[in-house]
Image (tube, rainbow, N blue to C red; front, side, top):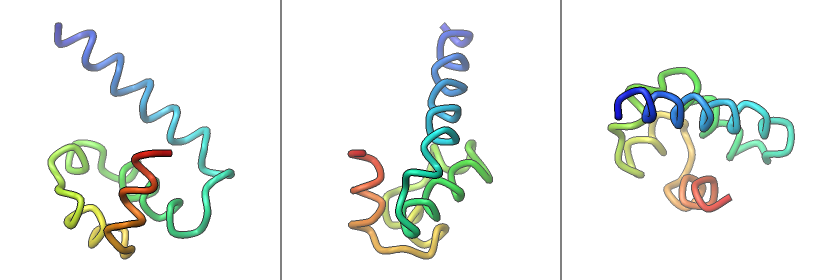
Length: 66
């Protein structure tokens, strides 16, 4: 089970990395905050991730839906 979770995490990080060029400036800041510290990002609330990326909470929501 842990190996599957690690594989999904790696795939998600690779997906975020591959989408960087297509994101707008604010969404890119969210992606970079996640890529900078993936372990911490998994524990962040929407508000905490917004603060870490220096963006608004709606920006984080848009990023997550994208």
